[in-house]
Amino acid sequence: MDAIPYTVHERPDTGLYNAKLGIWLFLASEVMLFGGLFSSYVLMRLGAISWPHGFDVLNVPLGAFNTVVLISSSVTMVLSWAALKENNLGKFRLCMGLTILCALIFMVVKSFEYGAKFSHHVFPATSTYYAIYFTLTGLHAFHVLGGVVVNTYFFGPGVKMFKTDPQRFTNRIEVAGLYWHFVDLVWIFLFPILYLL
Amino acid sequence: MSESAHDIKKEVKRYFLVFAALLILSALTVGVSYIHFGVVLAVAIALIIATVKGSLVASYFMHLSHERKLIYGVLILTVVFLASMMFLIISAYHDPLLGTQHLDKAHPVAAKAQHDQRQTHGGGGDVH
Image (cartoon, rainbow over all chains, first blue to last red; front, side):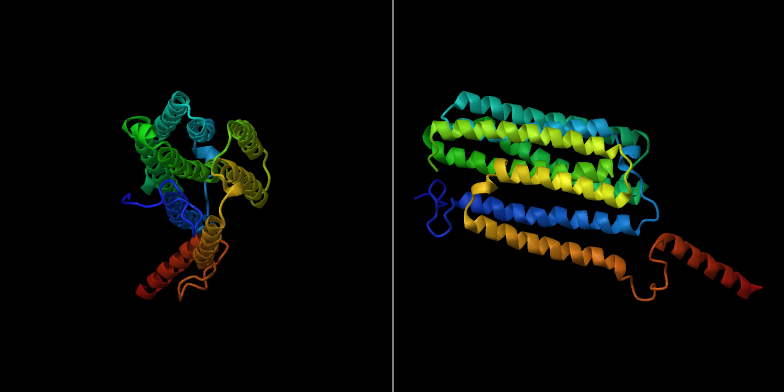
């Protein structure tokens, strides 16, 4: 028997394989983490005498480009899972590779945005707006990096499992996908709140 | 979980439709931001579009449109806790620290600056 039970088959009482329930509980905690920061943003904005318009101080085209990049990566992620369901390992590798590539593009663009701010001597301590901007986007960027690490493992050495235990590997990709879509979902809210309002 | 190849093909087609919808909504949210509505309306429109986009991602990419009851239970509980936390944090705006209630709530910073200035002025008067 495996160390962790129900990695492939559904547990009779929950109707889910264990990792799926696990990732959803983790995502629930993530909702609270980002929710706390979103609430802080609202509180600080309500209390501020003046608040810059995002589009006046941030680069909207770059932010919009990154939105498209992240949405595309979500699509390639779910396609990589679908490829495994079709037993098509080549297609899985292509889609997973594209997902990682999109994530890296996102990070490069974000680092350019940060770099531009730092070169203009704009830091988190500059204003309340920038404090929450760097906190929210920084935390989100760490999540993107975490996703890159996990997805790269599944793209590289982790893919071996597909030969020995294909269903379990497919489930792993589904779980990694759930996390990745959540990271995309957070950005869907961050982008208008920080860049457009 | 034994979808046939045909089912997967249908799913993939749906993923691309959702992708197209997400791109259109992204363009819409940027486009709308160039029209100068009032702050309240702008926030409402941006949040509605973001919520629709988020729901599409959650329903189709995260398969929430056909998930087990337990997951829905976890999410309902999360929403309750999230709403409570947001309410508690944001309500701090209407519940300033004891002794600061006289500050103008519409412009707390300005009111505080005015208040501080008055105190400094008053203090100077004492010295004279």
